[in-house]
Length: 168
Image 1 (cartoon, one colour):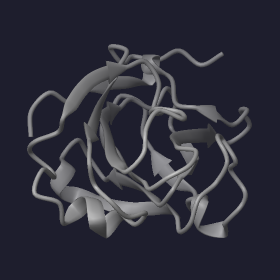
Image 2 (cartoon, rainbow, N blue to C red):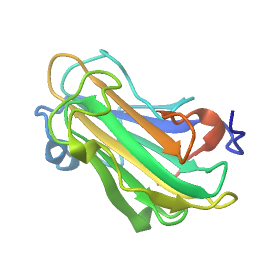
Image 3 (tube, rainbow, N blue to C red):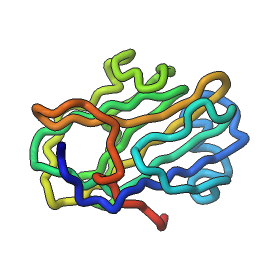
Image 4 (cartoon, helix red, strand yellow):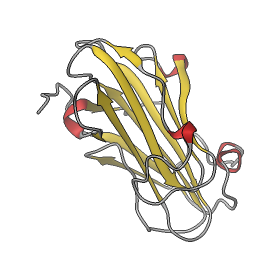
């Protein structure tokens, strides 16, 4: 297994009482991005599962790739979700690399072609800002991000490859 140099967690922020299923309803809410109802540290790059209705969430962390190489990322979630990655540790440089336009089942990685990123060159020893936005309407809810580097198995990004973001 790959060894990680992260300190173990990502920041999960929950923004409650937001109707709708698309990310614009989250982005346009008064609470976003500075006033989440709940903030907690999670030990993998995944959020709540079947927890609530009509909320949005944001996962943020600094990513520590264990080896240099070409990485592929996937995002799954219910309802709409987007995955962003920066070229460095700064959130200002993030770009959307994957997207769930509708909804998926928990950890369903292949429903939409947009869920999978292109191959992205990452360098071991460098850090990268990573963020997932998620909007839940009603019914099941989840968000998760997995990755794969060249000849390794695809897996949810674990805490050993993450360090928390604690400030805006």
